[in-house]
Amino acid sequence: MRKQIAAANWKMNLTLTQGEQLLDTVLAKHHALTTDQQVVFAVPFPYLQAAQQKVAGRENVFVAAQNCYSKKSGAYTGEVSVEMLQSLGVQVAVIGHSERREYFNESNRFLAEKINICLEYSITPIFCCGEPLQIREAIMQNEFVKNQMEESLFHLSAEQIKKLVIAYEPIWAIGTGKTATSEQAQDMQAYLRNVLADKYGDAVAEKISILYGGSVKANNANELFSQRDVDGGLVGGASIIADEFVAIINALK
Image (tube, rainbow, N blue to C red):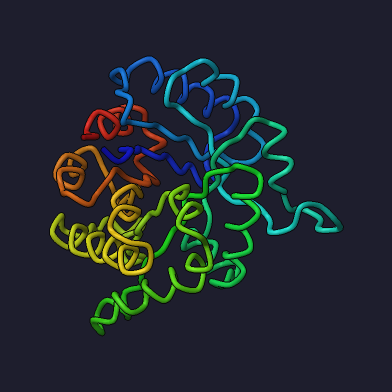
């Protein structure tokens, strides 16, 4: 079975004290994880070490960076390298979130460089892809998302691509309260798996976890996660509310 993942993206929220309290509450309340389930906390850079200490010794619970830079080191003031992340024991990084693409102009080709350096340093990328509202309304979402994957991922070998997690995030459903129906989520995620299968074969595509990201909440997680090709969620706003995120974790297959 593919890994079923509840990934929290705190974005630019919470003080350190609030974040520590949130972690304590969530870690105390969620059900025990099976070997096929994982919980990931993508926290702001200043909190990575504190979060690592909180999850230390817990099976299948990881801390992720929300971003990284594409170079190993150098004169890039304000950026954080994968070497820095590795030195903290961080094993996961979110790459290509729609907010990074929109506000910081991160291109598909630039994200390919980030994917490469993450894999070089044994950091699992959660690669985000998804379409804005105007693309969805024009019924061009398949071509749009396929292009994102081709330009950022398809230079990878089959062994490399199996190390990724993919998160499909319809941009029109992020922070808007709108959510793709479970059928829309399943249709797109099945399409993404077919795109992967066309490039790498069915056996590889079936091993890659594809998450849904877009206003996942406690009241819709069960229905979304019940879909065959939805392997959990990349959760924004609901992940900074302890009871909401605990319910989302408990909704994993």
